[in-house]
Length: 193
Image (cartoon, rainbow, N blue to C red; front, side):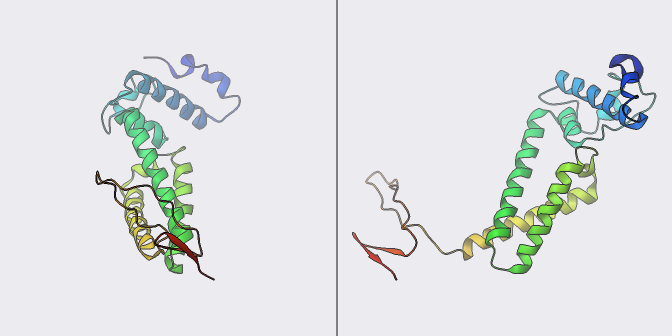
């Protein structure tokens, strides 16, 4: 247990940033120490505030103001990696919906959600916005809608691949897709004009 001003030389930081930002930096450093001690499973969900005093003496319970650090400290680094990969996959799915969906309303919704996801990525670096029920509720509802729109766009897209013949062992052979404007026809290829 250490004093706020003696651990990382916060008196030097206060010359460059205001007190609130300096305290936040100290909390981040203490949270990183907590992650180093509990990297795999964390300290348990919702327990960061109660464990933070073991790493930093603030005189009261405070939040880390960084959703990524909170997730890693409470649930471990694997949970943080899973969450970030999930958000990146969601971002990619939404980009595909925006680019390929035939309905302009859904494309506009996807574009708005991309803006919201970008804002959420950044806002969680300086706050724990995704930890609130309201924000996370809207996030996962929109994620489900984008996943369904993605499947719908895939169903509506014209098929550009060739049916693969089967090998004697039951596996499919790798046959490249026909180029645009060319239709496969048995062993010969007929050019469509």
